[in-house]
Length: 252
Image (cartoon, rainbow, N blue to C red; front, top):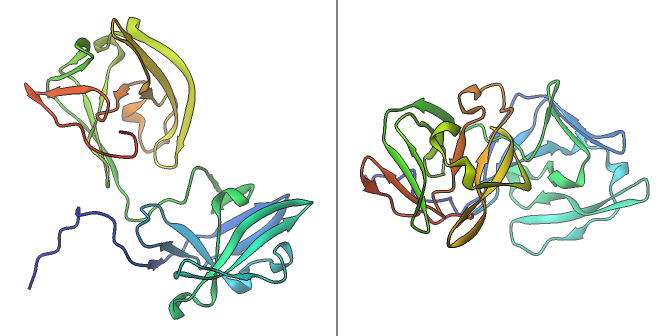
């Protein structure tokens, strides 16, 4: 028997799981899909899943009558969305895999609204195996950028999220907020909420969008409300006297 490393990367295979959630998708005020028996599907090499719907639970009148063959070796056919004069290219597709042959997947941004039960979703489908945990800590955290000390805290809150580096959320009183410049950037996370961003100005220059905060986080994460977090990928992060290596992620 060979041990399998669970944090060794994203599997390069098609995976799916059954869900009991009631999921609805709306386009132009009309229901494109409505099911109580969706599948959550992960395509090869993709960390973010999407929903697949039984084909009978999708309003095919909102899709082109004739799909076209897919060319990626995973998907079988692709359909464009046609509704109210607005086209959504590649809005729906089927899979060649026999376990998924009776299902249609829908592209997230081709629809106007996604709902689970009576709660509206945003950003992307939630992964049922994805965890986000916050722990109060007494670690000594120091953040420097271009040789300038930007934060020094002994009361961080550590956020552990599946597949991502640990994040260190710090009280604003422990951060040189005089070095922060508000940014127009906003991002959405289905687990944490809407994030606001700041750039940091040091004598060496401005590093854009390197700090973020959740002023109104999702109900399950009140512990990070109003705290400030720096991208480990772009700053020098020292924890209990040890300088951490900068992780390589999509934000590096």
